[in-house]
Image (cartoon, rainbow, N blue to C red; front, side):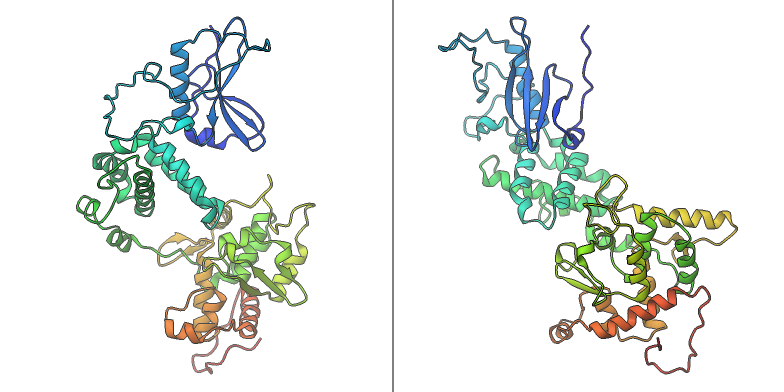
Length: 454
C-alpha cells in the first residue's frame, strides 16, 4: 500500500519554506511546488506508467481548500490520455473552469442562475478563504508592515476559515458569524473585534465583486450589536495596565540584569535605558545610531505614531552599544540566534526567568505590587514615567516626548512642535544614573521642584 501523506492545515501550508515539492495530503498526488518566489499547485496522476504534473493555479490565489476540490474532481473524472501533439510531444490541457459534470459532489444545492458564478475563471472556486486571501493581497501594500497582513491571515485561519473558509460568500449567514465570534467575544475581546471587522471588510469586498448581496452578516451597527455585548464596555471592564516594577527597585533589577549574558538581556537593558517599545528595540539597527551626536533615530515605520523619533543616548546606553558584538552582513543591534529579529515574547521571557531565579534565592522577585503580576518589558516605560514625574520633577511635555506619546491636549500639541531634545537628553542621563543605583536616596519633600542635578 502506498504511503499516505500527512494532511496539512492551511496555516502549515502558508508556513512552508524552501524550494521543493510538498505533499499536502487528503488528495493523493496533490503538491505545492515552491521555486523561489513562485508557489504553484500541481497534481500528479499516474497515466500510462508515467506521472505527469498538471498545474492547478498559483498559491495563495488558489487556496488549499480550492486546490483540493479541483484535484478531487480531476482524479474522479480520470480523463483519457491526450492525443499526440502534432510535433510528437504529449500535451496536457491547461486547467480552466471545471464543468458541472467534473465538479465533485459536495452536497451543495444547485446554483441559482440569478446568483453570481461559483468560480473565478482560472483562479478556482470562489470561497470565503479565496476572497480573504485575494483581498489581503490587494491591500497589504498600503498597510504599515508585512506583519499586519500576516496577522490578518493568521487570525482568519484560527477562527474564520474552519467555519466559513470553504463557503461561497453568498452562503454566509449571521449564524455562521456568531459561531465564530461567540466563543471568543468575552474572553478574547480585542481579537474577536478584529476578526469581526476583517470578516466584514472581506464580505464588503465580495459584494463589490458581485459575489454576494444583501446585509453584511458581520456588520456591527443594526446587526451584531443586538446579538453581542458592546466590545467597548467589555474592554473597559477588563482593562489592565502593563505590570510595572516600582522605580525604587529598578537599580536592583538592572544590577541583576547586567550580571547575565545574552543578546535578549542586552536588548532588554537597551530598552530600559531608552524607554522604548518592544518593536522599536527588536528592530534597532546600527545604521540608526549616531555616536557623535549621541542619538538613536527610529524610523517612522517602527513607531506607533508613524513619525521619526529621536532618542538621546546616555553615557550608559553608549557604553552598552559599544559592547555589542557585530554580526557580518547584519545591521540589527540584537539579532536572534537563528537570524532576523528577536520574537515579541523574548524580552518578557527574560524578566520571567529573572523573577523565578530571584524567588529561588529567597528574594521577592520582580512584581507589580498593585496588580500582583510579574513586570513586563512595556511596564518599564511606566516605571520610567513614574520616576520622571515623582522623583526627577521634569515637566509633563518633556516626559511625553521621551516616551513618544501623543499629547492629549490638541491645542497644546498644535503649539508644541519641537522635540525638546536638550531637555530630554538631560532626562535620559539622570534616568541612567538612577538605574545604576541599587539603593537610591530620595530627595527631600521640601526640595525644589527643579530637575535633579546630574
